[in-house]
Image 1 (cartoon, helix red, strand yellow):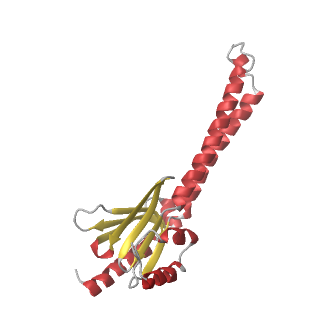
Image 2 (tube, rainbow, N blue to C red; image 1 turned 30 degrees about the horizontal axis):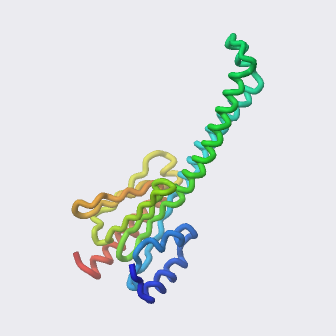
Image 3 (cartoon, helix red, strand yellow; image 1 turned 180 degrees about the vertical axis):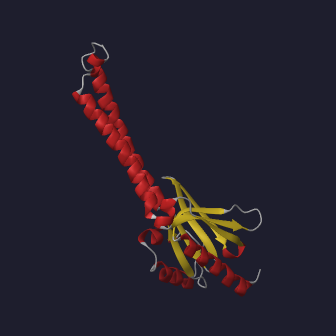
Length: 204
């Protein structure tokens, strides 16, 4: 992609209004000099809290198990004369599970935070990290948006005001599904509004 000086200046001006994560990935999407940034959509922090709570629960459970194994004589309770071998195995196993849980929690948090959606006057672009070394960038012309659906399931989704956006596309293109979207109804209005303005400018 060869950007003109006007494109570069427009991109820089638009990126000034983005978050740190948003600026980091903004360079991966096409952004022309006549294009305007409408919104940056990041996932709701509640999803990040769930990741840390899950990891924390595993770490806590394994720590309790290791502490119990270090104080109780499991061999004697099972009638085995192994001189603490089972206790040692349990402690070592719990240690490796804790280390694995810490690593997976940090990776999960990074992947969650690296999801960014950009809504512009011309397109919807999404940057998603499927894994540490698997990044997917999708770009959809705003004119190809057929419908935007918002779903909020559960008490917490309503209390914390997050939900799922489903963007239905024209033709055989795959629908876009964004989860843990904060203030989803307001975000859907931004997308629909951008779509309608694009139709006024360019037609069907």
